[in-house]
Length: 111
Image 1 (cartoon, rainbow, N blue to C red):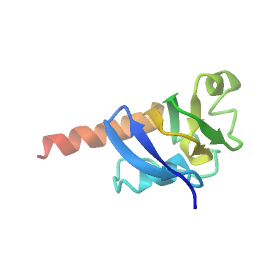
Image 2: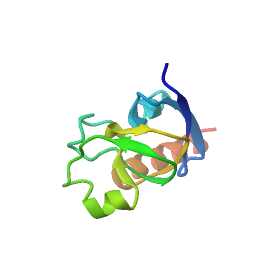
Image 3: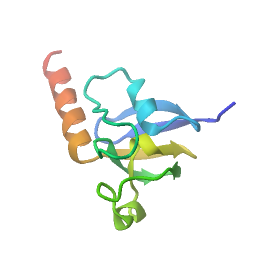
């Protein structure tokens, strides 16, 4: 059975559980929020770009058009191609950040 890790999203202060054999995006989708953008799930569209701020992840091949080698060295990955290897702290960036932050603001204003 795959180990389960705790993943924290800095933009929203949310946490979710993610199995080592599950992508970070797959785990995020389990939050059940419509604000998380999902694209091709194959590393080609760049919609799910995040920055890992602490912890370790194993990454499969990603489009260099969306994550350069320099960005990858700074912790940027596509959530659809990254698998947790420890508990992680991450931050959504670019399109994903705008979507989840907008969704969070909408959720707060409707309560």
